[in-house]
Image (cartoon, rainbow over all chains, first blue to last red; front, side, top):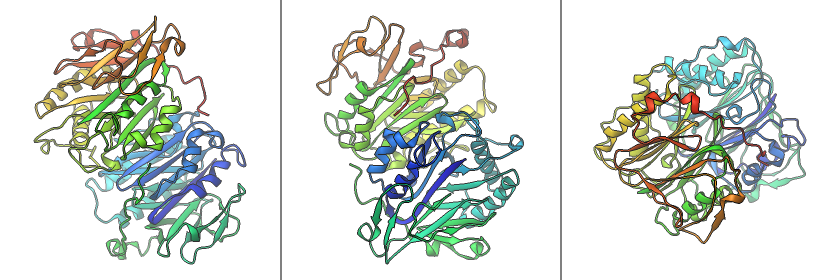
Length: 281
Length: 281
C-alpha cells in the first residue's frame, strides 16, 4: 500500500511540516520504500519532484523538506509497490493535460480485475493499476465533456460517480487536482483537517518536530491537509467514510457529499490564490 | 530568445558540467533571467526541475548542478521571455503523453502569425508560441498515426517536415525527445558535439570550470551534447544548417538529413540504455 498527502490553501503555503512527517514513513517509521513524489501547483503550472528510491534518505526529498515551496494545491505520495515495478514511470503522482489544465493524480490501494479498464487517448506509460485507472478516469471525463466544461462542480461530481465504479474493483483512496481544486475519494483510509485562526501548535507523530502555526500564518489563512493517516497527534482529524468524496477549494472543504455542489456557484466563493510573494531563490 | 541544451548518451550520464555552463547564462553571463527547466528521462519515466526565476541564483538549479542525476536523454532550456508572461506554466521544457510515451519539447526562437496553429486534444496550458507549436506538432503526429507507430524513424522524419512549416513562421530551433531519441531541428543556432574515447579535457566558456572526461567515463561511452551556442572553448562543435534536423540515439547522431533514416533498421543499432547503476541517495 501507499500513503497520500494533499493540501489546499487560500494563500500560497508551504507543506514542509507535513511532508517531513510523511517522508519518515518512506522507509523509516513506515515501510513505503518504493518511491515518493510531490506536485506543487503555482498558477496553472506545476513543479514535480519524484524519486523511485526511499524518501527517508533522498537528497531531493531533503531539498523539498527544507526549501519552502509555496502553493495553493499540493499532492504527494509515498509508495509501497504492489502493482508495477519500482521505477520512475510507476512513481506517483501522475500528471496529464486535459482541457488546457494539468491534472495530477495519486492513489492508495490496490485494484483487482482492472485490466478491463479501457483507456482512450490518454495511455498509461507505466504498469500500475493506479496510472491505468487515472487514464480511465480521464477518458470518462473527456467522453462526457468533449469540450472544456465551465461548471467544474458538476465535473467533480461526475468524477466521484466514476470513482464509485473503481471502488467496486478494490481499495481506491485517491487525490486528484487540476491546480485549483483538490478532490478526495475514500474507500477506507482518508483523513482531513482544516487549520484556521486561532492557530495553535501541532506535533508530528513520525518525528519529534513541533510547529507553532501562529508564527507561520496570517489571521486570514485557511489551510486543509488530507492524508491516509493523521500526521499529528494533538489535533482532531476528520475521518472520511467509504464512498465519500470531498472537494477542497482555497483551503475549505466545499462539500462532502456533493449533493449541494450543483447549487453552489463556485465563482462566488472563489478567492483567487495569489502568486507566491517570495521568489524561489 | 532562449538557450537550449540537450544530451543523448549510450549509458546513463550526468549533465552537471554542461548544465553548470548553461546556468551561468541565466542572468550571469547571459540575459536569460526568465526561468529555466531541465527534464531527465530514466527508462520511460522522467524527472523535471523548473523555476520561473533566474537560474544563476536558484536553489533548485544548484541541486541539479551538484547532484549527478544520470540519464540517457536530457532536455534543458533557459528563458528570455518574448511571448507569454514569466511564470511556471510558460517555463520550458513542456511534456505531454502520446502513444504511451512522454514527449518533452523545448524551443528557441520566436514565431509570428502562430495564432492560426490549430491544436487538437493536446491544448496549451500557458500562453507561449512554443507550447502552442508543441501542441500543434502533437496533433500532426496523432492525425498521421492514430495508433502508436512502430517505425519511429519515419515518425521523426514526418515531425521534421512539420517543423519546416513552423520555420516559415519565424525562428524555430527545437529539441524534442520521447526518452529514447533526442531530435533537433535548426533554424539558425544549434551546435552539437559527440564525445567518445579517447576522451580529453574540456573547459567551459561561461565559468572557470574544467573537466577531464577520461576520469568520468568508460571507454565505451558515447555522449552527444546539443546547444544553441557551444558551451566549451577547446572542442570542435558542429554547427547545424538552417532547416537541418538531427536524430540522436544512444549518444550517436543517427542521421543529419533524414534521407537514409527509412532504410536504417533502428532496432539493429539500438543499444538499450541501462538503468542508472547508482541509486539516487
